[in-house]
Each structure stands twice: as C-alpha cells, then as structure tokens.
Length: 299
Image (cartoon, rainbow, N blue to C red; front, side, top):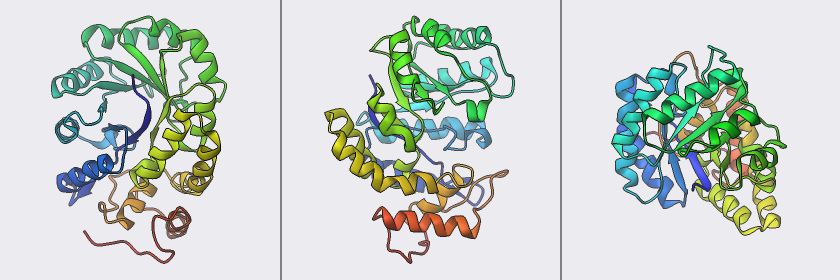
C-alpha cells in the first residue's frame, strides 16, 4: 500500500508560531524532488508541543498541498486513546490517506493494553492505520505476536518500525503476512531493513536530501542493492549527524542551511551545540548538499 521514501516532515516555526509559508514551500519542494509520501505531525514534526489547533492545521495544510499527488500519512498518536481517536477522526475528515499512531508513551500499557488501544481506534475511525513502534522514545515495545493479532483487523495495514532489531522485518512478515506494510523509522538501518523485507522508510534525512533518499529507496525496490549501497554510504554520515542531539533540532538546523526554514524548535528542545552544528555542516558537504563553509541563509 505504501512504499518508498516518506518524509517525516519538520514543522517550521517563526516568532513562536507555525510558519505556514515555509511549510508550504517545504511540501512543494519535497514533491518536486521525488519524495514518495508525506508524514506530518510525527515526532520529527514536534507533535508533542503542537497545540491541537496547530496539529490539525498542519495536517489540513499537508493534505491540501499534496492534492493527491503523493499519499499523506498523518501522525495522530497519543497516550490517551480518546485523544488519538479524535486526532485520527480529524485526519480522515481532512483527507489523509492513513494515520501513523505511536505506541502510548509514559503509561506503559501491557501487550493486552496495546491491542485494546489500537483496536479502539481502528473500530472508531475508518482510516488505514500504521503502528509506530519506537521503544527508544516510548519505553514499551509491541511484540510480534501482538502486532500479528492487530494485523488481522482490516484497517491495521502496517508498521513504522524503529526497534533497530533487524530480525523484525523477517519475523513480522512471517507473522503478519507479506501484504503487511513495513516501513523503517531509522535512516541508518534502512538498507538492511529493506533487504530483510521492508518496503521503505519514514525518513528524517529526507527533509534535507529528498531526492537522494528517494533514489536510494527506488534502488532497493528494483533490487539493485549495489546502487543502494553506494547511495547509503554517501548518506550515512548525514544520517548519523542528524541524531547527535535530539531530533529534530539537528535536522532543523540543517534545513536552515538550505534556506528552507528557521532552525527554531520549541522548548524543551534547544538549539544545537556549536560542535554539533560543525558536524552537521560537514556531513551535508560530504553528501553534496552544501559547500564546506556554508552558513545559514536568511529567510
């Protein structure tokens, strides 16, 4: 259903609010550069610090701008099942193609609680759902058996897997079936993930290198892993640099170097350290995105 390079969109800010002009330009540039799909209001989009009004507006804008040219998977997760249902219902009404729903953070539900959470959202809203499994941020890990049980529900269609366990794609495919959509949530392991049964990535790096990341995914889809490895190796320093500090602060700084938006994040995220900025610039230069001495452009 969904495959290739899906960009985990940053949410540009200006003077404390959402910079809609920068967001519009970012989305249009992503589509022009060949990105296969858009994911607004995920962790990279700083959804934890967006108000509900802002969250809904960003999803609506993304769907409007995409205008059916590429699919939109809206982030609608919450550690409150009621809130997740409300956000998912809004995404459906806005015209999103699917919802990306993170495992409930902080509450630490059991596997039975995870199943009940997703089933409640599935039953309440008729929109395809991708599970977002990211133990590093949410503490809990949805196991393969729970995912297989959820995959039997008609609108649970796939997973964004950020477990970093490269046995997962194979085991998930065996348990959930070949049609269950498996997208990596981690750029640095996307090559191995695809080789083990994945069909794409919800990518942070695609915010600043959309064409290269799309070409990498297309090479994987063709089975041309020789070419994919060349692209992967070129991008690896960038994948690593963008996670030296907490995402999305480094990628927002990188986006500012390209003139895409201001580097602003919302508290509790703060501007990256000077040493991190140097490493981000160096990685961007190695990837051919900027000159070695590039400075931020003014918007």
